[in-house]
Length: 504
Image 1: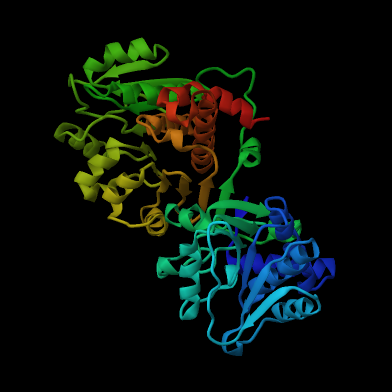
Image 2: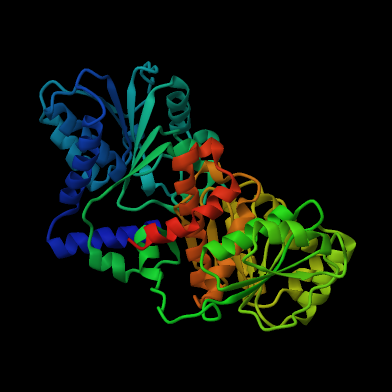
């Protein structure tokens, strides 16, 4: 699914209106009808509903919803904020005139000082102040209104966007002045801002309302941001050649594990094998031989000269993919081995976990990472690599910049794992759950991504596919064990089931 900017969404609306031969006011009726039906499905006519409408088209939506609710037996209290007789949009003005024609509706047009009505936890507030039409941060009396609504305890429904929140970037916004919605009814598309952890408090439950916008426009208008869902993955996965052998399914050289941390190597190896890799060779300290061969006898073991840590990384054969990092520690010997390898490597590789932590110890190594490589940091690893950041939004901006600077792909792991390519394209993952926030989950992901690339998927496709399948395996595991009981091994065990489910 494409994630569009506000400007692109406006073009899609305009194209739909033109093709269907309708007016903007007709489209507003369609949107308001969808919002009204959702509200009616949740609350009875006896529920106190207070509507706050702004002077723009979002306010027009709110006024149209108020009219429709009134016609269905509800008694909404409606406030149109037209302070100092600010200019109403044409659609907002038209819907105000339609309200005038309703006898008995509780409607107030605020043009002077406004005393906010008493609200409490028993009430429903419909936020139609500004939505996605906001151009500058809220100020003046609107900030007081927003803060009163947020403090009231009322259940807040925001139309399209919580007022005060921008659809993409919010670094310059005072977060005290954003509506904290319990339910956001967004038109047709989720927005980029919805996928940042710091904005979850404002969005609440998010439901996408299908307004039947032009599929032609949706297909034709470009974007750099995509939400990866099952139908996308279904189209990515190719059938296996029944005459293939293990060499056709790719070979992985996995540098992982150390004394006391061989579990990382085991989990990464299982992730690779369970997602279809033909051959996996694990390079690990000599002491790792017994645990690895016992837990994953399907993989080959290549011992390092050191008994406890990795002290050298050398390729003695050709491999489809080289993956380095899970559990290798950041010892001086390992850091020197990684330094030597990266400076001599001429092919893209996959770097995770302690490989990234080693680079943090020697930041100049960022410039030695082979072009086209894939880095898979979680939040703390990312901040250690690229500098401290306070928000997911800031991390994404930095990732976009540095993926281009170093010509690498960055997989920024989190609730919505984001894959950022050097060309600026962003792929947001939709699978996975909170139960996957557990030790070893990232090690499994390393194996899965390496496996899909080894099988012949292009690196950008293999990364996106691996992230989704990994999350889907976690969802399957959570169904059996609950989010509290999921362990990394459960994710690895369900990778085959996840691939099977994604292909349906």
